[in-house]
Length: 425
Image (cartoon, rainbow, N blue to C red; front, side, top):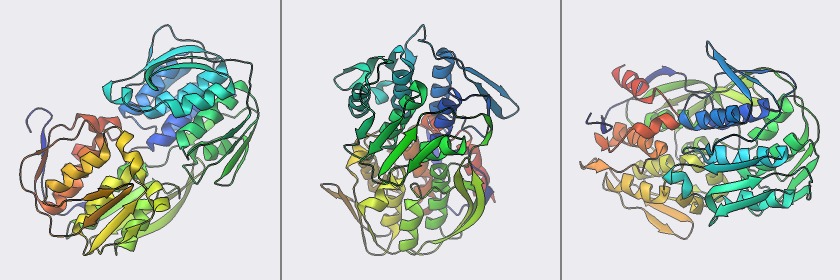
């Protein structure tokens, strides 16, 4: 270790583990709790920096949030404009979904974030919330921006120009805080965590994968257990799928079907993955996921499957590098506007082990080979998912050094300690 530099070693990963609470659901639980009719006690809230950004922003807007022995309690008070700029740090979820809450609550707020977040687009959500009635001024479509919400609701029927769980959620939160009914059309199976959570907490809401209808009304409090984060588990699942001799059991993982494209793709490649249902939490199906090493073969990942694995595309690219034959992954254009340019990051990861991917339009093509680490240091671009993907790659291809592990705390505090433990078994 040299500062934040870290070298991930090769070899199998073995063990039975739990992972942090789902980051996407954690954001939403805090926001819904700020509108609930009674205190909401959240067990297993993700402790990473992204969720902390939402937590601190809501506290600055007057929501009472306290923690005691692993339980975070949210008590709603009428939202108020904070006395300072809301710092969303690196969290696009914080910025986009809280814009909806502010629009519905009629607040005047200025939002900003770090350099990475300032490069990410905000205009898609801003345009929809302007139709709702908010006045929003962005900086060339990005942060920093200023919003002035309004109680004078204009549009209550929206059409998504492209499927986006964050835009859809922003509109639902605008309606929740304004206490109005809305309908959203044009979805194509984007993540439905907000819809599930609202229904679980008593809201009157219907959705079918293409349309959402939210009927104005309060949500209740109570106790909410957050499922394990599938995206966090995916690094361990992929490492086990790639490194000979590996066997991993991840417990209590949320398996919302809008999130599990990685499992479907790995199974189509011959991956040995068992999903063992374990009930439901927060309106979400939960399972234990057992993964063992098995040789992979090339496959085609269509755009709809890729959308259900959008945060795991770097991991699918790694699997493709080890698969016998050619793998194509469609629908990858949005990867350029994540925490980093993830297409560029995928190239850096694969080139570090001697594999050259091809990008044509929105298709990524990878010809499998025998990847081996060639030395040097991988530039993670400050992206937590790329840093952890390097760990999975190293397990199978040989030792790899990353320029920094600091970003991992965005979503998976304790990852390095867990990784060491899995490698020591």
